[in-house]
Amino acid sequence: MEDKIVVKDSNGTVLVEGDAVLLTKDLKVKGFNKDLKRGTLIKNIRLTDDPGAIEGRVEGSVLVIKTMYLKKK
Picture 1 (spheres, rainbow, N blue to C red):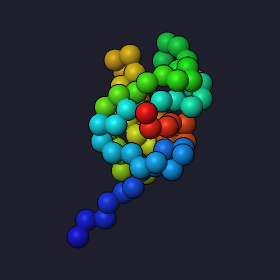
Picture 2: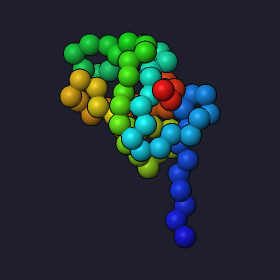
Picture 3: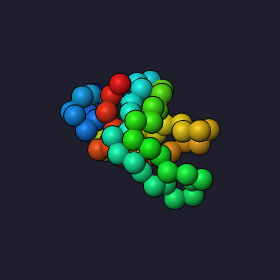
């Protein structure tokens, strides 16, 4: 039997592959040309092995973002 990892956003809402999420805080990203602003929409997320992080595309780059800074749209 598989153990499913449950990934939740900052409000406790369960996230699944393909969801769209919003940033709840401005974030500085190392190696990225500018900061990510609060309210930035990240579409079509992918879940990782870590229940505290997701992968998403922002301006053509794939970033791993902690779920504590996200809320489901």
